[in-house]
Amino acid sequence: MESTVRTLAPVADTQVSSGNSTTNYGSATSIFIQSATTSFANERGWLRFDLSSLPASANITSASLEMFCWKATGASLPTEVHGGTTDTWVESTINYGNQPAFGATLSTTTLAAGNVNVWYDWDVTSFAQSQLTGDKLVSLVV
Image 1: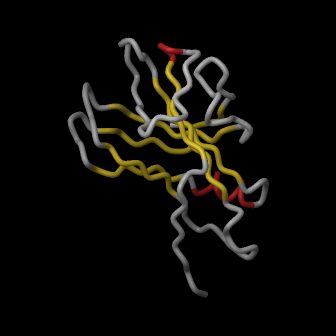
Image 2: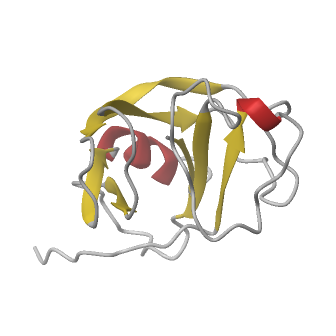
Protein backbone atom coordinates (compact mmCIF):
# COMPACT_ATOMS: atom_id res chain seq x y z
CA MET A 1 0.00 0.00 0.00
CA GLU A 2 1.32 3.40 -0.95
CA SER A 3 1.86 5.93 1.82
CA THR A 4 1.32 9.58 1.00
CA VAL A 5 2.36 12.51 3.16
CA ARG A 6 0.07 15.52 3.02
CA THR A 7 0.77 18.90 4.54
CA LEU A 8 -2.31 20.96 5.30
CA ALA A 9 -2.29 24.66 6.10
CA PRO A 10 -4.92 25.90 8.53
CA VAL A 11 -8.09 27.30 6.98
CA ALA A 12 -8.45 29.56 10.04
CA ASP A 13 -5.96 30.62 12.72
CA THR A 14 -5.71 33.25 15.41
CA GLN A 15 -4.66 33.86 18.97
CA VAL A 16 -6.62 34.89 22.04
CA SER A 17 -5.26 36.81 25.03
CA SER A 18 -6.60 36.78 28.59
CA GLY A 19 -5.08 40.23 29.13
CA ASN A 20 -7.16 41.59 26.25
CA SER A 21 -10.17 39.32 26.54
CA THR A 22 -12.38 41.15 24.02
CA THR A 23 -9.71 41.77 21.36
CA ASN A 24 -9.74 39.74 18.16
CA TYR A 25 -6.36 38.95 16.55
CA GLY A 26 -7.74 37.20 13.47
CA SER A 27 -5.93 39.43 10.99
CA ALA A 28 -2.53 39.08 12.71
CA THR A 29 0.23 37.27 10.84
CA SER A 30 1.74 35.58 13.92
CA ILE A 31 0.35 33.55 16.79
CA PHE A 32 1.88 34.21 20.20
CA ILE A 33 1.80 31.55 22.90
CA GLN A 34 2.62 32.47 26.48
CA SER A 35 1.76 32.03 30.11
CA ALA A 36 2.56 35.29 31.82
CA THR A 37 1.45 38.15 34.03
CA THR A 38 2.39 40.79 31.43
CA SER A 39 -0.24 42.92 29.73
CA PHE A 40 -1.18 40.18 27.24
CA ALA A 41 -1.18 37.57 30.06
CA ASN A 42 -2.05 34.08 28.82
CA GLU A 43 -2.13 33.69 25.06
CA ARG A 44 -3.48 30.71 23.15
CA GLY A 45 -3.47 29.84 19.49
CA TRP A 46 -6.55 28.46 17.72
CA LEU A 47 -6.12 26.62 14.40
CA ARG A 48 -8.66 24.83 12.19
CA PHE A 49 -7.77 22.35 9.45
CA ASP A 50 -10.08 20.96 6.77
CA LEU A 51 -9.57 17.26 5.98
CA SER A 52 -12.20 17.16 3.21
CA SER A 53 -9.49 17.34 0.52
CA LEU A 54 -8.24 13.89 1.55
CA PRO A 55 -9.44 10.96 -0.57
CA ALA A 56 -12.51 9.11 0.71
CA SER A 57 -10.33 6.03 1.23
CA ALA A 58 -7.77 7.94 3.32
CA ASN A 59 -6.50 6.41 6.54
CA ILE A 60 -4.56 8.72 8.86
CA THR A 61 -1.62 6.81 10.34
CA SER A 62 0.17 9.85 11.75
CA ALA A 63 -0.71 13.51 12.23
CA SER A 64 1.19 16.32 13.89
CA LEU A 65 0.75 20.02 14.43
CA GLU A 66 3.95 21.81 13.48
CA MET A 67 4.64 25.42 14.42
CA PHE A 68 7.72 27.56 13.81
CA CYS A 69 9.20 29.54 16.71
CA TRP A 70 10.85 32.76 15.61
CA LYS A 71 10.88 34.50 19.00
CA ALA A 72 11.40 33.15 22.51
CA THR A 73 11.64 35.19 25.69
CA GLY A 74 11.36 34.13 29.30
CA ALA A 75 11.56 30.64 30.74
CA SER A 76 10.94 27.34 28.97
CA LEU A 77 7.22 26.66 28.59
CA PRO A 78 5.55 23.24 28.54
CA THR A 79 2.94 23.80 25.83
CA GLU A 80 -0.16 21.65 25.45
CA VAL A 81 -2.31 21.08 22.40
CA HIS A 82 -5.99 20.38 23.00
CA GLY A 83 -8.71 19.32 20.60
CA GLY A 84 -11.46 21.85 20.10
CA THR A 85 -14.95 20.74 21.11
CA THR A 86 -16.48 22.66 18.20
CA ASP A 87 -15.38 23.92 14.81
CA THR A 88 -17.85 26.82 14.69
CA TRP A 89 -15.49 29.53 15.96
CA VAL A 90 -14.81 32.35 13.49
CA GLU A 91 -11.31 33.70 12.89
CA SER A 92 -12.49 37.32 12.66
CA THR A 93 -14.59 37.31 15.87
CA ILE A 94 -13.08 34.84 18.36
CA ASN A 95 -11.46 36.31 21.45
CA TYR A 96 -10.50 35.07 24.91
CA GLY A 97 -13.90 35.95 26.34
CA ASN A 98 -15.97 34.09 23.73
CA GLN A 99 -13.65 31.21 22.81
CA PRO A 100 -15.29 27.78 22.85
CA ALA A 101 -14.44 25.09 25.37
CA PHE A 102 -11.69 22.69 24.43
CA GLY A 103 -11.02 19.08 25.28
CA ALA A 104 -8.31 17.14 27.04
CA THR A 105 -4.61 17.51 26.32
CA LEU A 106 -3.58 15.68 23.15
CA SER A 107 0.16 16.29 23.40
CA THR A 108 2.71 18.43 25.26
CA THR A 109 5.99 19.85 23.96
CA THR A 110 8.29 22.16 25.89
CA LEU A 111 9.25 25.36 24.12
CA ALA A 112 12.88 25.90 25.17
CA ALA A 113 13.96 29.26 26.57
CA GLY A 114 15.86 31.26 23.98
CA ASN A 115 15.51 28.56 21.30
CA VAL A 116 14.52 30.40 18.11
CA ASN A 117 14.16 29.59 14.42
CA VAL A 118 13.14 26.01 15.18
CA TRP A 119 10.10 23.87 14.50
CA TYR A 120 8.08 22.32 17.32
CA ASP A 121 5.55 19.57 16.85
CA TRP A 122 2.73 17.90 18.74
CA ASP A 123 1.23 14.47 18.00
CA VAL A 124 -2.47 14.87 17.19
CA THR A 125 -2.97 11.54 15.39
CA SER A 126 -5.88 10.13 17.39
CA PHE A 127 -7.83 13.39 17.30
CA ALA A 128 -7.30 13.83 13.54
CA GLN A 129 -8.43 10.23 12.98
CA SER A 130 -11.64 10.84 14.94
CA GLN A 131 -12.36 14.05 13.01
CA LEU A 132 -11.75 12.37 9.64
CA THR A 133 -14.62 10.00 10.37
CA GLY A 134 -16.70 12.94 11.66
CA ASP A 135 -17.10 16.41 10.19
CA LYS A 136 -13.59 16.43 8.63
CA LEU A 137 -12.67 19.62 10.50
CA VAL A 138 -9.90 19.65 13.10
CA SER A 139 -9.78 22.54 15.60
CA LEU A 140 -6.69 22.65 17.79
CA VAL A 141 -5.86 24.93 20.71
CA VAL A 142 -2.22 25.54 21.67
